[in-house]
Image 1 (cartoon, one colour):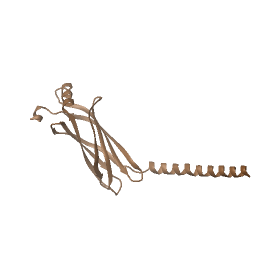
Image 2 (spheres, rainbow, N blue to C red; image 1 turned 90 degrees about the horizontal axis):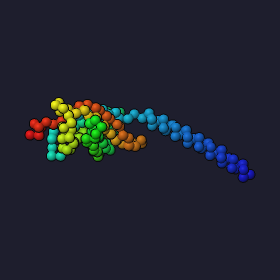
Image 3 (cartoon, rainbow, N blue to C red; image 1 turned 90 degrees about the vertical axis):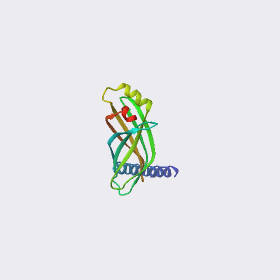
Image 4 (cartoon, helix red, strand yellow; image 1 turned 120 degrees about the vertical axis):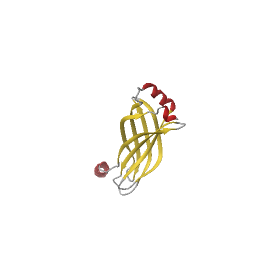
Length: 166
């Protein structure tokens, strides 16, 4: 009798295991097809000079496909010139995305004076540097949890000249 009970337990365990595998596959398929917000970097501009360094602002447009607003957990950024990181930072809890619309986020990027001066020495007469800006937008989607939307852009950015300081 013990062997027939053991066989029944093994069969039931196999059935339950198969059901769990099917449920995992179903959930994974549904999660893979969930629409996520889409983001693009519209512009990166020189804003000014402060006591801490040179200020740039990146405008990021984020399209929310959901009718409810979605909270933004944080925005992280890395500004690179060639292979060198010239600025990086994190903006905690910057607000939320508007439901069924596009939200424009302003991401302030500060470049320290020491780095800006070393960049000025490396450039030619046009005062432009090639840059790459990598932004990670971490949002909290209900049921799914936190996801990070990577956004990257490349271009030329203007360095401040002496008249920008005075």
